[in-house]
Length: 257
Image 1 (cartoon, one colour):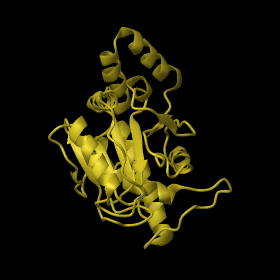
Image 2 (image 1 turned 90 degrees about the vertical axis):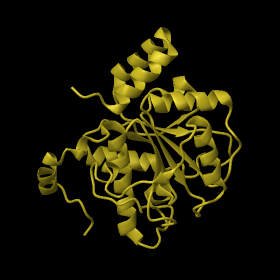
Image 3 (image 1 turned 30 degrees about the vertical axis):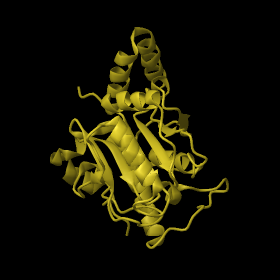
């Protein structure tokens, strides 16, 4: 039986934390086994620029897939005990931020090596702004020698559930995503295009931001990319097994009309 990324994160990170912490992590997984996003809390006034976005994507995941979902994103600190139960963590922002501490960097590095996926979502509206440079600085510290590079459009993350191409978001600053690979998988994915800005709705169900230039079709595709990233966080390259593709295409409408 294959091991999911979530099981790998918990097993790998709890081994590092020691027997006592391992028991706590394993117990949490056994009790709930629900998919959850973590939203990384860090020293910036805009660590959560789209407060209602992730909960809306979680609802879409629940409607579109067979995943058991926690209804709200969990704010997490860069602490291993906080990170260990989250296979997918979002780092969001719209401006530069102060360097993280050695302890925070070590915790994130351990979590990444154990199988975690960090999704970085920029809402600063430019490709090479202060937020991007701050993220690259932290990648240099956490994964020495690695840097963000363009994700190929035929990568499995763009077809893990729907067919996407990486240009999705509230805006299209760049028509691709970037990422950092580790041990044959993407450990970090970076969107310049404000994914969460397209997902966010207010308490009355109204979308909070307009989407440019593609309007509602672009919004739908951005939601679908979010579903894909969640599925990739759990299943890695399962969908590279092309024997499933004809069956899936018959069962599912993959593109927006």
